[in-house]
Length: 92
Image (cartoon, rainbow, N blue to C red):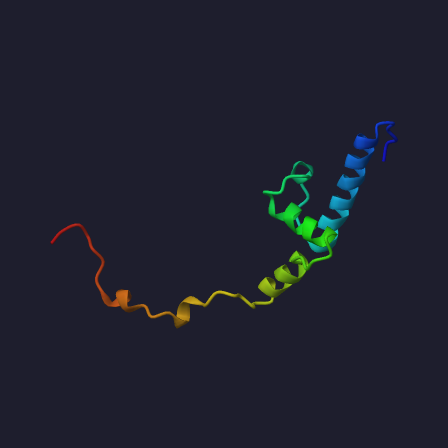
């Protein structure tokens, strides 16, 4: 990290390093433009982490998804009553 005499600039670089470490540890995509932008989901989770609240660990979420634990229902269990109908071909 470069040394700057301006304390605000130093604080921004320190915050950026902490945000990078959070994104790496919790599996979020790092984008430096998201720093201080409360509309971005990774930064919202970072703020929760800083406040000591529970934040979502994306490494765990991805592991569940790749292991086959999908929160959505599969298409096999749906009631597909429309499949018996013939498709509309433009003529009556």
